Image 1 (cartoon, rainbow, N blue to C red):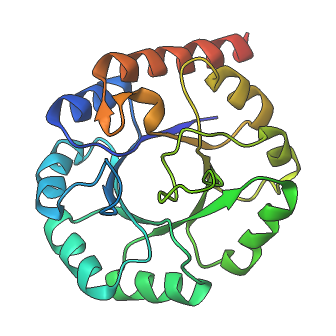
Image 2: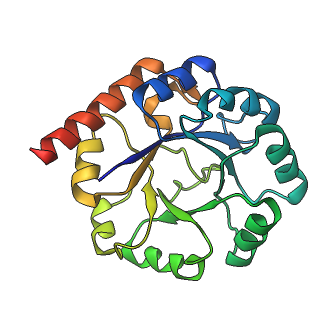
Amino acid sequence: MALDIKICGLKTDAAMAAALAGGASHVGFIFFAKSPRYVEPAEAGRLREAARGNATAVAVTVDAGDAFLDEIIAQMQPDMLQLHGAETPDRVAEVKARYGVPAMKALSVSEAADLERIKPFIGIADRFLFDAKPPKGSELPGGNGVAFDWHILAGLDGSVDYMLSGGLNAANIGDALRLADPPGIDISSGVESAPGVKDPALIARFFRAVRTARNTRAA
């Protein structure tokens, strides 16, 4: 089975090049001002050009209003929107209808009961992203470098298309793939040398770890 890999929070040409060289299926750009990974829509539009025909360019927003989304769509021309805030099913449907772009809804997870929250979004969101709940006091809905118990995903309906996020890195990706067997994975802080600073060497190391883990499972 193919595994989608999203490198999120990209801000530089070097990081983009490393993500694409490693074989990223998705590249993500953060439009949340409090995040150290924030990038201006025009700059994201410039960076995403390298991904055309190579990877799905994802615009990550947090409860963004129509005016800001208009700017992102116009300047970046994303292939997909990732809605990482408290957006309701109605809001997801509204955004999809307004822009004609697929939407991935992010949900915070810490226990099996949290997975019930996907039900109102089924048939509306094109995909889900399961991230760990932010630590107490964090202003960031994602990118906090914390994981949740991947065992709980084993009981998820196989028809649910999702990406696993939260605390992934080269050291633990093998366990994540073995325990959850997700259709896609999303990494941000796990390939950074400092908050918001993507390290091309760590990106390359992560892709190597993914290949090793997949080859081991196949064998």
